Length: 302
Image 1 (spheres, rainbow, N blue to C red):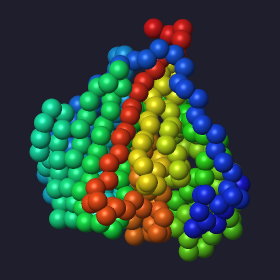
Image 2 (cartoon, rainbow, N blue to C red; image 1 turned 135 degrees about the vertical axis):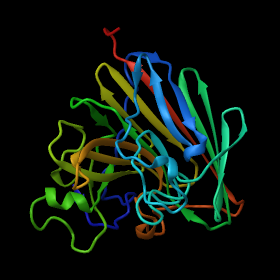
Image 3 (cartoon, rainbow, N blue to C red; image 1 turned 45 degrees about the vertical axis):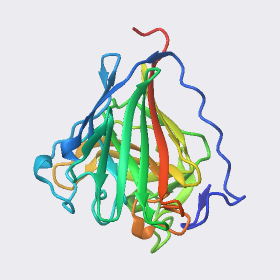
Image 4 (spheres, one colour; image 1 turned 90 degrees about the vertical axis):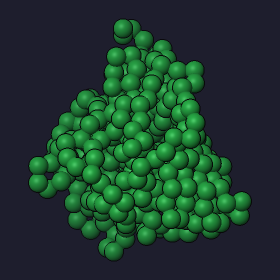
């Protein structure tokens, strides 16, 4: 099913997704490390002898300043108030965070203050966020996680989830399918507009970005391991950003990078987000949300 750019995912004509089943296998306790001096970046997410976060090839991460072009260092970057657009990947990844308690840190910008507390609970990594800003402030947020995955890995999400393909996908579709002048094309997961997205490799020289609209829970299966992301936030649009770069980007010296990005909002660029496509700070002046990351190992594997 394909819908024009701008059609709301809650339209009765858009198919309703089913829930993702619980991950099979034994729970694998996870641990996370962060670097507060370098944008609060998650530098490690590991458990059961496996490191999940990919490390990027680009130099210069240590010398960035607010407003700088994004440096693809890998790990998990906090993107806010936008992902694409201006400033590139948002305004917090390039700022120094300060510790305010056990596992807790805060970063300030001229428009907002973001507090994050990370804890390990029952084997999962739980990150609680609180954004303080003027009522009516519009923003996008993404946990921009770049993962180290094999060519056999796949992304599992509820079938039928409305999925917005972004313009780099146009070259992979039949002529005339892409709506001229539109920022995205919406279809059903796992193959919006007939473009299968759930398989994450092998490298084929393509790069595709998409947003799974309204999706709160996804999992990455890279046998025997399963990694699950779950996002909770009341009263705000949620989704999952997806970046499948199979050595199709950048044009010079392309490399492989796979992003699974739980997010508030339904667009990558705040400037393209419609009235219902971005989070909005309510009259109380705060928005709170929680990201839970857990891992399992399928039965029959050590």
